[in-house]
Amino acid sequence: MTPAIPTPSPGPLAMALFGALILALLAGAHAELPGCKIRITSKALELVKQEGLRFLEQELETVTIPDLRGSEGHFFYNISEVKVTELQLTFSELHFQPDQELVLQINNASWGLRFRRQLLYWFFYDGGYINASAEGVSIHTALQLSRDTIGRIKVSNVSCQASVSRMHAAFGGTLKKVYEFLSTFITSGMRFLLNQQICPVLYHAGTVLLNSLLDTVPVRSAVDELVGIDYSLLKDPVASTSNLDMEFRGAFYPLTEANWSLSNRAVEPQLQEEERMVYVAFSEFFFDSAMESYFRAGALKLSLVGDKVPHDLDMVLRASYFGSIVLMSPAVIDSPLKLELRVMEPPRCTIKPSGTTVSVTASVTIALVPPNQPEVQLSSMIMDARLSAKMALRGKALRTQLDLRRFRIYSNQSALESLALIPLQTPLKTLLQIAVMPMLNERTWRGVQIPLPEGIDFVREVVTNHAGFLTIGADLHFAKGLREVIEKNRPADTRDPRTSSAPPPSTAAV
Image (cartoon, rainbow, N blue to C red; front, side, top):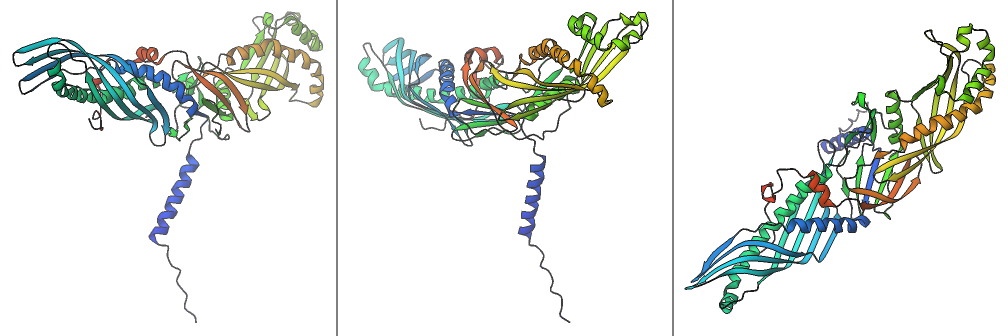
């Protein structure tokens, strides 16, 4: 008999690869899909750079340079009260860089300085104020962006290199020739001190001041008295050479059920365009979570009683149910009429290249409400409606305009009763158009804030529908200057850059 050949067992490498594959599949299965994505393209960087440089110049002009004292042979000097009088950041570039996120390069900048001099050479003393200039200033700083513990975008690290190539002081007076010979000691010392001050200012501006601006981006905030929205980042921002992409949860929730969440089974929105400064994408989940949150909060219902029912509709309804009404007691016949609409299940949004629609199913109840007596139901029916939705961005708000496109009512009791409801089709549709739709649009046109910092708005937006999601491309506009917003939100105890926990001032050679 032929002996059985043993099956070789998998090696440790194969087992490790198999385990890694299983973990990757499990992680992918539980990864949360974003309901909202934002892409900032390189076309936005010129605008951001202009506003950022204005703010940076103001910060660098406040640099505090320590006093400089020293001696060389019989020459003693004391330089104090150094002030920046002029700052020119002539050549600069702001760009995205993978792994570093955002890089600012400044070349050949110049500073004007004014300081007080106290000089002693043998028995000759000279004092007063003098002008100086720092030339060939180069600064290279990189901001690393990440997601913090609550899902907010933060500047997590700032790397910096700075150098001053040349320093010149315009000495004068009776000892001008001596000063010019010995000024190398002074200018070299001042160049060293200036180098030491640039990077701490930039580190403070990034990790403290810029983060105070990013703190104005909403993470979890109330939309109104019923519903809130969650814009927490799902992962760290991802930078390429041409854009910066961010993925947000983009989910609404009832304020009374802050821990409730709707499972996201929608198509993940995709961003491919790069022609505009910024692109925002919303999936069907974004809108479905909003409508389900309002449904759970009990907001999707309407009750009209007595004078609230339009007069013409009141007459049509009473005529339609005349046979039932005349059989009632006289006390009930003249009772106020009640019309109640109640959404039966959360509405659903469908986004197609041809447009966006919202499907709604509601119950319609018609009853008489005698004073101090139980109401008397005349009819109950089902209403199916389809609304078209048009999206727009105004400032930082995503606004929606709804329009009634399809409407029908039917009985859930019998086909015969559905036929009897046909005369009510037109008056009830008119009621929706003149009474209900304006109330809905008044709320939806107020809009929902998009996760942008304070002071920055969208302009010149273009909406594009896709299969399962829509994108909005727009340009950016600074409605407020960075200085104004940062000063408003600046922490009170961090105004001095020297109090920040800063890294070594610079890695560049002096």
